[in-house]
Length: 513
Image (cartoon, rainbow, N blue to C red):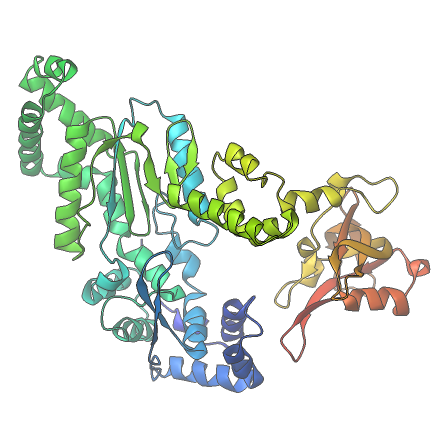
């Protein structure tokens, strides 16, 4: 892949820095440090833009914080200005860099988090026969972020990027933390994915053994001798009785095939294979190459085990035919439910307080567990069932769409979000309530969505609408006030756009425009 240049010209624009602030501050309004930064937003963004363009930016000091859950570690907090400039610097190249990651290493990629990896692993196990992936090994890199080598990291960046201004910014960020990369920063996540991306591809090709005949012969001899030394069963003895040539051909076939069942999630490497001896050799190669070329160590707790014993990873235990919840997560859920019941909480309040743990557990095969805890009837399903009544006559619940699907955001194109408003009604919400317990008002709208616009530049453009009608709900007070005071059903049907705005208090709201 060619190196990318001319990045700084796309980064150093007011629009890009505004997108960077909006991306970082999304769902964080109300935090004092963000509000203070937003009070003088234009000037602050202009200063950051100028510092980036002139290569004069220096990362602020980090504030360490000690955390104990889920395990003891020290994280470091950055200032808002550092987060904003890092977001802005990566927005133009983020997707391009992430496209260089191997698809079997989805960590740090938006939309490909823990549950994406879990689904990927389970699909592979259910697709393959038990003999094909009978053994597995899980390798855990020791303190991955802390041990990322600065020199190697800079070389990896220069293999992808050649813009001098952008390289200066990334180098300054890397050197701002004395040991490895700081944990908990967006830029660190992207760089950590880049760091081991070449290792992923090398491991899948069995570390290039087929490209070097001397290496192939050495590890081939190791394979034969290890098979002789580890022979314990009649099946293994029958394999040995076929001769050394047979074992050599078998090893060469494994190398040509490659590690088809390799995957990595952040610092957890998982390799599955049918041959235990071959898997031990691949682990030995992995440890050697990670130590030599990446200056990383593997925790000594690894072991090659049969897949039927279960692979404990990402909070779940993986088997060929089922996905179970990790024991300590199951015990934490049971203890929390028991503690809340002892305090006298109602079943609805218990579901609310345990929603995150129940949601995490629901991705595994935990139906009996949730049923025994009386958690099977999740709050989300209750809400969904309540909403299954269409607000307009002749419409069905299948015609419902989320209001977010038709909202035009500040950087969006209004012509792509046009709707033909056919009808609306205002009533009480069955879910949302005010502080005094009374139901909040909501607006239900019935509409068609735009297909395309003919002659958009003319005074009377022709709107072509897609077939089918939809309805959506919103609790926006501004939209309700507009429908109550500014227009009525006599003005319908009419062409409009529901647009998102941000007020002086940095709160978002929707409005008909």
